[in-house]
Amino acid sequence: MDLTLNQIFLRKTDAWSVVNTLLNCVEKVDKLTICSFAMAEAFARKLLRERSKIEHLTILLDFTIAQRHRQNLLFLKQVANDIYLCNTHAKLVLLESADFSGVAVMSANATMNLRYECGFISTAKTHIDTIIKELEEMKQNAIKH
Image 1 (cartoon, rainbow, N blue to C red):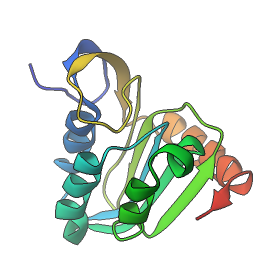
Image 2 (cartoon, one colour):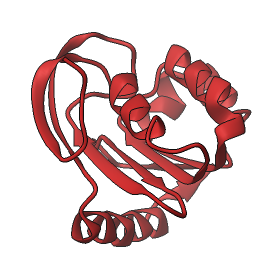
Image 3 (cartoon, rainbow, N blue to C red):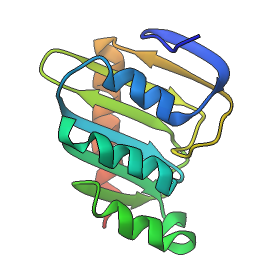
Image 4 (tube, rainbow, N blue to C red):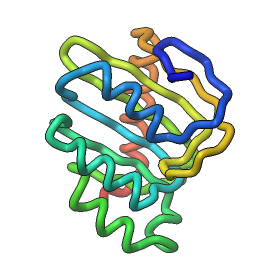
């Protein structure tokens, strides 16, 4: 069963399936923000393949990636416009475009592991506005890489 908008889910899936659900709603993405504790190289490579569709890509990751997976961080610098490091365990995707915006809050890290994951995909303006505001606060308390 595919993921759909405005849905709570608990199923075997991965973070890329959630991102892809949102990406499939638009032809062009003005802003894509991904927040995760960790990000695998395979996930970053999928983002790289979609970059022609994404005007601005921001990634927020936990400080741990700079310590344990420095090579992934160096690769991500070639993929993203902005990278922020902070103390985070949040996993979310925010897609903003002229005619569509959506947010997904999920349990899955930005890795390619197929596991039981839960989350919520929303197009509600109140949810999106809340996440935009809180992401800005998060970036103010982060270190730009």
